[in-house]
Length: 548
Image 1 (cartoon, one colour):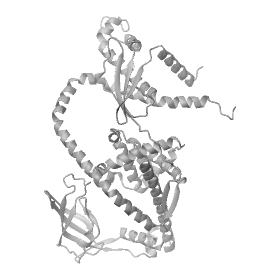
Image 2 (image 1 turned 30 degrees about the vertical axis):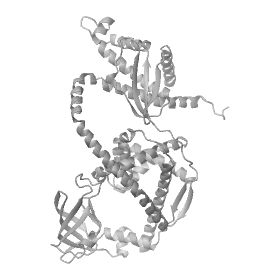
Image 3 (image 1 turned 90 degrees about the vertical axis):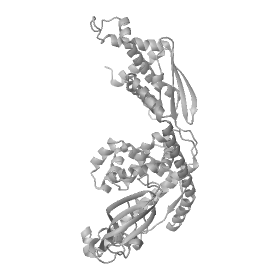
């Protein structure tokens, strides 16, 4: 009895033999833009006729035609009655098969789905079928030298001062507040009414919670709020001038000079708990020494994690700076969702709740353009590096990462995994872990130099100063691009109406499109999987040196 694998091989061999009986499709490839290829395929008549006969044969066994029993209607009647529908099915099937074969034969690393204009492809009554489609392809580039990358490692120790700072933050988090008629002091709580005006803007909110410390009102950063509110009592009014950020969620506020008028309604005096044995016992420690040792160990873990992340970023910066290539014109737009998912995962890993991230989705989108370009470029570079590395990600590693994220947010790991699997984000976690492993392998071969925290701070300031002109240039470019897009939208308004009318008129023909697209997608995936399957078979059949 034949095994399933033997049956599969036999079927595949039969299909290949049938394919050999037909004239082979011709495939022509030409450039049609930056990292974009136009592929023209010609399917010869013998294959078209064979596919047509095959489909009419299948139809003949099941078609219900008045006056004839099922499976007994003559072919000429079937052709007359179902000819148009069968022609569309033949076209869709042939295109679905030939697209994947053409991509495989061309040995192109395609990105996304092929751009096929099905409306413009008709199956001819006689002669061959020729059609063209466009695909975007991955960039080809040379990798820089990967051994001996220069990396700075910040050497930082956790001393008593840092432990004291952590304890102070803990005290502030456990502070108590009590209403007072006295003037506000540093750290006190304030309830105030806010009125925002300027440049045509007028907005009021009756109740905002603030502290005598740097804060924000309606997304407007008030960095000098500690100085502005100190000494104020109930009934006092404070006016603060502020420039709305360019990434503000409200489109009408962006970049505008605004006034924020705060009317103090309530002052609450802040009282910090004393740090003694009673305080540490409420947290679960028996002695002050045990408490401070625990904090020191936790801070050391944080420092180690931050140092490792900083070194990884230096590797990424080096790869981006040392590798130059163009990106496909449309690929950034298609991958925006994927990049935002990666940012989403990163924020969740830092303990920020999903709901809070979604609230700031507009800000993430606004800042994504340059980040998307770098992320996409880095993914191509790391993808090429990973081709030469044996890097695998296990389910245990994915579950461990999800458990860590869930713990930070006080959630159940099982529930979070379900949510991440449902929206596809779990795949980004696997990619993130794989890329981290690749970068860590590069770090093993890096040339590492230890520097102090002060030296690291100076380097960071120098980098920010160098990056500011680039950021301004990119911002101007984005503004011009947005303005052009608005103009294009206005000029395209009438053609869009015409396009809608045409689309409605062709609705009946469009009902066939999903099946054709599905066939194309399936064939394209098959083309991607074939080389892997062949390689697997080759490896399985090839005897090892040991057995020889």
